[in-house]
Length: 385
Image (tube, rainbow, N blue to C red; front, side):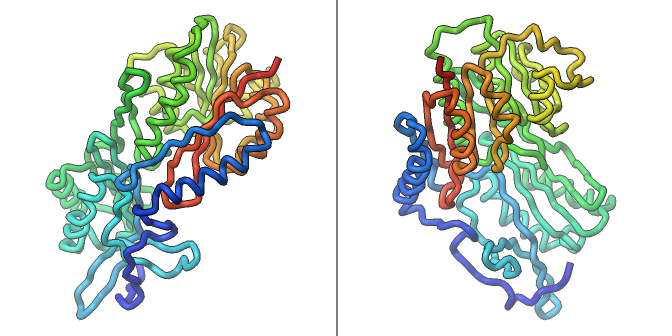
């Protein structure tokens, strides 16, 4: 890590790349929701439900670069972030009020301890936080050097002092001092679900909005006449975030995901929640479609008889690029499509195809990322007979 003069650091109250203005949150959300509504207006959608985020302390994940300065032979580390428009100009972060309270409460004492120890500070490059709504916190310290027993001893003492879990990372090295996950607890349709969320793997960043999304989807099935002969499949299932609470409405379920870590967490989450009606399989969205169309056999599916399933409902939560044409053709075969999107533009593009066979039955906007232009959307489509 290079040394940088303190004059290079920009003091800022604002949060980089965000229009952080809690006093204007409702106005910002209204503008964002109107844009999403206009974008989807050509598809004859019903009125859009809007789910607001808390104004403060809503993020369960945060990451900061560490900037090192030397003044009068005194070394000091700072949290910094960067504006997209000025990616080489570090902005010192002394407060981060969008982060949840466990993160906010830990940032200052953690940095104080790092600055008090040459071993903990030496070539520290980045700090990442992962928290649960129940107060658990995993902190990952990432270095440009290999870590040794001296580092582990000091980090373990700090872990105990701050009542957190610390992980040390360097090139081809990962040291877990106690654990590398948190357990999130979410109430959906009258039941609490526990989720193992692993460090360095995807999890929903806004716990309040995540619960709103799960409740919104579950409410759609809770009021219908349940048919125990119907089965459910989810693509891009992650750690089973949606799969677990939706499984109760179907006879059997399958969740597919390309990430080994996420699949392992999803299987563990079934055990934690005593759910035995779900099979999780490591497949990409395209591979899942190929398997369902019998275009290719997969050893990872050898224990599953796909012909025995009566799939009526599919859930997709794709990356920002949306769904490719083959996957769109594949999901169009289902009676009900639940599409969770982190990019309204690609959602609109995909709806151009999907609304040829389906109509939008339910539509919602979820403010997963307040003070930004990003908006999470959900649509539930029913096949038109």
